[in-house]
Length: 283
Image (cartoon, rainbow, N blue to C red):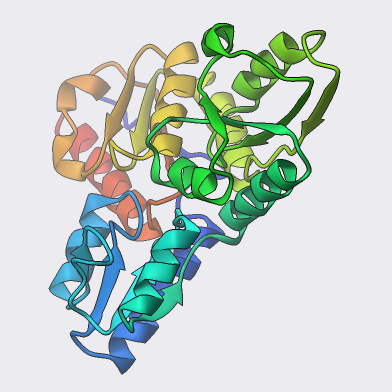
């Protein structure tokens, strides 16, 4: 077959917050060999987490389970009581929380202090959302407009957003709130990198016949990219590693698109690109 065009989305892969967290952990590991642990996976990328473990940075499920002297708060952030507990245990804390996630925490706390009923637009149980709720304990998590139906809304409502949510979902929920409350205050805390990657993925997927989305299956932003791409390209596949690629996906492809979640380093994107080229050469 004629080699298809392979195009990587204009905005794809590891964001500032992820790169910052990785840099901080690697620097800490070099200074404190085998005495650094992360509270939960540093980022939602199993391959990166596995490599960190090989380099001596283990994952602790909780502060109380941490055996290392230096404990790293992952990019998704944690509730304040987790930090307090770490200090009680005499741990040295390294805060790798993404600065954009911290904005969500601060906004939620401010709204609660000012008497607003706080709604967090996001996924219940997600580490970032749990960290936000830790800063505003009364906050309710709303994942869709339908979930609002079960909420008894108060007069003053304040909204913050999980950084990896889509603008479309936020707007749909806000539309349902309008007219139902007397005062509505909104902090649009969707990360710019998230919006840029979603827009670039939507553009590329509308122009290709095969779309590959790279990133952890538990990564919220990667899953959303896959959903966006699937809406315009039926032949969309969400993978974590190159060995998941199947030659049949590209049998009739003329234009292949690649995008990647915010927790996917450039070397993983390149590895998938190379694997696709090799598969197409064999067809």
